[in-house]
Image (cartoon, rainbow, N blue to C red; front, side, top):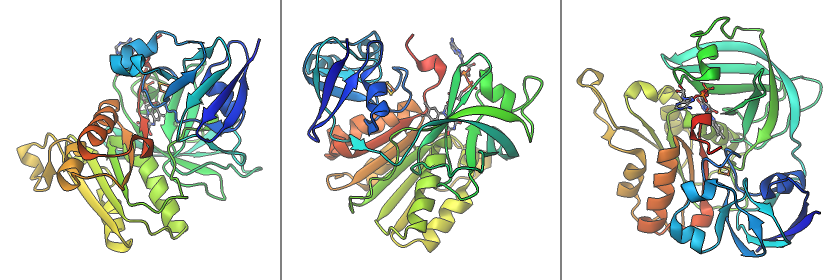
Length: 345
Ligand SMILES: Cc1cc2nc3c(=O)[nH]c(=O)nc-3n(C[C@H](O)[C@H](O)[C@H](O)COP(=O)(O)OP(=O)(O)OC[C@H]3O[C@@H](n4cnc5c(N)ncnc54)[C@H](O)[C@@H]3O)c2cc1C
Ligand code: FES
């Protein structure tokens, strides 16, 4: 038996079929609720159930706080309705122009941007324009049907080429292959199976509020896509971009970010390094990247935040910005780069 879910305050509604999660059914109905990992590991899809019965699964117990569970919050990627539901999701929006598709992807370029970051350019079939929102991600489907997600680092291009920034996680099934730790290594001209676009990490253009972008490591990739999109569309909102890494080498495209600061109106770039070595001769900001934001902008009411990268950074940023800097949680947009090891089975 299917159940109807109504999303407040927008009033959108959709049907959930047996076995479907609330998130999957919403996406099928072209309604984007906030989400990132789709696997119960990141809490981006956290939403409040106002009315109705549902099966929550195990994951909320592990990653939500007790007071959130008590207030009716759950993870929409794990929730299965047992009756009609009314849920609250101020970030929900319609996307009738974007279609999720399975596609072959041919590797065009492999370039090391740092010892542990690879720039990978893939060609999607040129026959049909591949549409997505700058900031969204692509899934590669491995031989055993496991998936790995990577944020697209460029806005849509006429030639259907996609740039990715992939960080090596030693022992990782896919990135050991990309970095040639396991043989045969990923090579130019290799074909990968992909499905895209996914995610709710894209610029909400209806707003003209000033923006904080905060990234750690390869969390730079979707920020790059969004900044290039803003440049193409001549969107001149104020941007403060904070990019954090352990060492200066983790900020693997620092020149590009500095160039944005010099050429884009209202754009500030703040690199932040947490564990510089003496040899690095680092004279810039130090510490955790989200704390640098809080030092500079103790009052974030009136700002919108886009945070991307390590799950711990994204989680701390949301918690601290909302609790200590007055940020409205409805305008905290995030992609947490969870890995399979973070997901609760
Ligand atoms: C929405 C989204 C966007 C993303 N975008 C990017 C991006 O743009 N760039 C990027 O670099 N990454 C991104 N990621 C992360 C990416 O999807 C992968 O998780 C990452 O590349 C690791 O994949 P892997 O197959 O190499 O490692 P996995 O096989 O998933 O392993 C990850 C790590 O965990 C360890 N491990 C594996 N299994 C276990 C276990 N059972 N117990 C303990 N440790 C274990 C491995 O040794 C390895 O170090 C994104 C993730 C999400 C959800
Ligand atoms: S999208 Fe549901 S927990 Fe990550």
